Image (cartoon, rainbow, N blue to C red; front, side, top):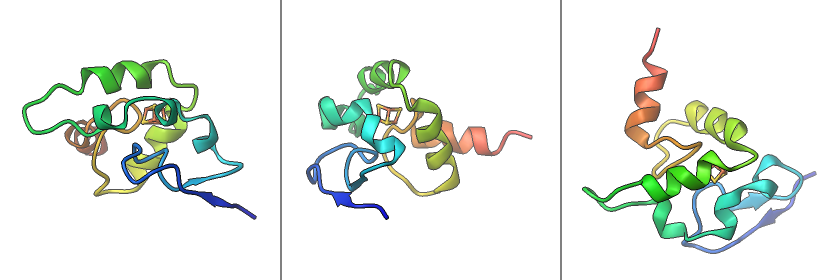
Length: 90
Ligand code: SF4
């Protein structure tokens, strides 16, 4: 059984709606600036990607994001566009 924990409406996607006992428990973004994971058009996602690079659950996060199309923001160190490109690779 899993329990949902609301971290905050503005929390990064992996951190928002966390379920205890899952990889989201170790999401580094839950401890950081959530706005960095949702850069405005034309703004850099560099800060979020640096955080993701150090995240212990990056692989799990990216796998989840690749399996769930339509997610916004940076997941697993990749932007939505970068995830789409990765999905389309042969
Ligand atoms: S890889 Fe990035 S977006 Fe995914 S849980 Fe870790 S910090 Fe959050």
